[in-house]
Every structure is written in C-alpha cells, then in structure tokens.
Length: 231
Image (cartoon, rainbow, N blue to C red):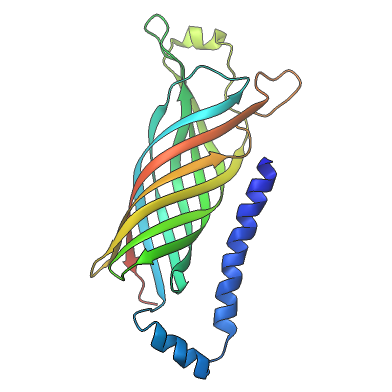
C-alpha cells in the first residue's frame, strides 16, 4: 500500500509535467490567441525563495509505542514555476527536524531527534485573483538522514535504554499542504500548513528488530517568501 501511494504521487507529478510540455509544444495559432483573450491576466511565473517555520512530529510505530509529539523547526530553499493558469510545479531543499519523545518517567523524558535533508517535488494548484491566492501542494519527497541525537536521560542510562537509534539512511513519503499567498512588488509571501507522511521506515527491519514499521509523521507551519525571477 505504501509503495502504491508513493508511486501514485510520482505519476501525479509527472502528469503535471506532461501538461506543461503539451502547452509548450503547441504553436501560436488562432486558438492560442483566443485562449489569451479568455485569460488576459495570466502570465508565466518563475520564482526562487526561502521558507522556514515550526513543526511537530511523531513516528508511526508498529507495535505501537506510547509517545508525545516533539517540536522542531525547518528551513530551506524553494523554486517554483507556473506555466499554466492555476497550475505549477515546485522543488524545495529543506533542513528538517523530526523524531519522537516518550512520556516522562521519574522526571526524565527520553527523546530521539532525527535531522534530515529533505527534497520535496510538488504539484502546485492555486485559485483566486492575481494578488491573493489560495493554493494546494501535493507530491512525493525523499529525505536523507544527517544525524540522530538521543536526549533526556543521563549517558549511563541511555546506554542501557532498550531503544536503538534510527538507522535507515533515508526515507520517502508524501507531502500535502494548503495555504494562502499574497503578491507584493518584490514577489510573493505565503503561509502554508503541510503534512509529511512517511511511507518507509526510519528503523531498518530485521528478524530481531523492535519495530515492524516506523514511519515519520510531521505537521508543519511554514512562512515562505518567493522573489520574482529576472529570467
């Protein structure tokens, strides 16, 4: 099921690209002129930007594990191109924190912090006037594990703690978000709520492994600023 969801998101994004290529391959004809007359306010957009914000995360374990949401942050670079009205593509490169924490026991709370380099590739849909828009983002992502940090307990107790560190070098999943954006002279500012749902495990599974499944589940609130491209 999880590979099927990821495959669907990839094909969905490729379908968006095919729409772009079909539009670019059509020569200017009378029909094209008529289309421009119908959509006089549309012009192609290419922009580069920065994004950042806060998130909360957990890991979907099987067997289940009693845990608490863990707060973190993310920051990154973004590119977006809108070739057709209401439809665009976006690529991001994000530094992102994830992980989970367990309920406090005797004043000590175990937490495992996972830091990733995340690459989402998104289909971008928007509605509304040129200045103010409502939008949706949907597409696959891949993440590469940069570091694992355990905290909340003394080092001697951590060494005896039953949980191992996350050991999968990367993961993949599906990202979906909704938000509002506003056009300014320099570019566009947007606020977005997004969910990243992992479709692969953060722990490698083996016959002696603790967990049969372990997927990242991250909710984030992002503020982004896209600057108009001179190209």
